[in-house]
Length: 399
Ligand SMILES: Cc1ncc(COP(=O)(O)O)c(C=O)c1O
Image 1 (tube, helix red, strand yellow):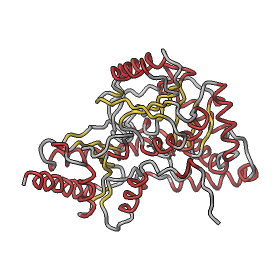
Image 2 (cartoon, rainbow, N blue to C red):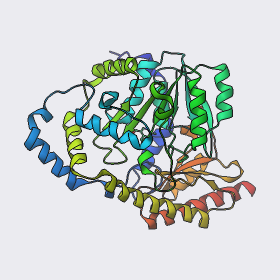
Image 3 (cartoon, helix red, strand yellow):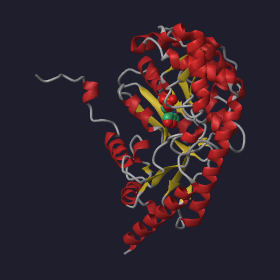
Image 4 (cartoon, protein in one colour):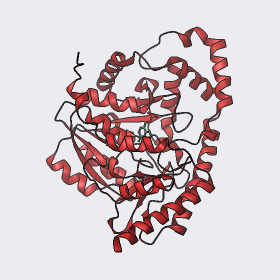
């Protein structure tokens, strides 16, 4: 018997070979890894979560172990809605759907909005797993470039003259992979351009709470109201393992469709985890917890930037993030990042070449460096090795 797989899952995996290579490399022992995107485990509030688990089971055990509603646990939805005030948006609990991580939100929006052949718009480069999700729905993926201060507005304006994407998927704060953040001016101009179309703005903001320097970060929801869906997650603030994210969707008609789809997918997100998280948030000060994480990441980012400045050969450019978990480095003379990645892994350092974050470009000279999950010593050692790899490859080219 031969199992008949659907056409959708029979397509060659979009970027599958890159992800395979990354995962294989990541399992090598003793590797210094700048390749992933993991929060630093020393930030996980294990004891406070244990206390929350006990309290939920003692006080509301039956509710926590029973089926629940698709939209999610009320107190958690309220907490999330209120917190949007700091990003300049007024929301109520009714605007929030709790999802299984923001990754599920990406699939829900694609399922509800995209028919085969529809245009969708993403940043260039963009979050790899978002690209993979969108590809399952057979869209035409359009891209708009990024500058130091966010989306290239002139390119966006020109593109919108000729195309009608269903949505613009953007990560405006400390973007994955580049670490770049939209300035206020760019936010305003992008919002004005989006407002002149029927396209939905999909703002993915997993890193917005991780600002360790500077200010800003207003949500597009502030400018666009119902024309904006805001995705969020507790993965980078409390725990990725709990798999709790959300969609904030002020548009009721869209909300109904998203709920309908989620109901079919999984009925609801794990209610036990939702209640434990809500209890944790009630009994602890999330801001104080965030201050600890931000201090940690600021230190790690500074160590990495300092080492890059000290050890990298001339011509290596890099972003200087004010938050989040990533630095985006560009090699001199168009040196291929895949070549650097392959050689670096042989010498014990894992980086992620830029290629899989692009819809089309290959052989790019950019790579992503993650600093959140390494000690100072490993960062210094890893950057020294990486610098030597780049020097050697540049020299091999000349010789
Ligand atoms: C931009 C972006 N969106 C979504 C996600 C998925 O996060 P979650 O753990 O909430 O599913 C990530 C995870 O790294 C991310 O970087």
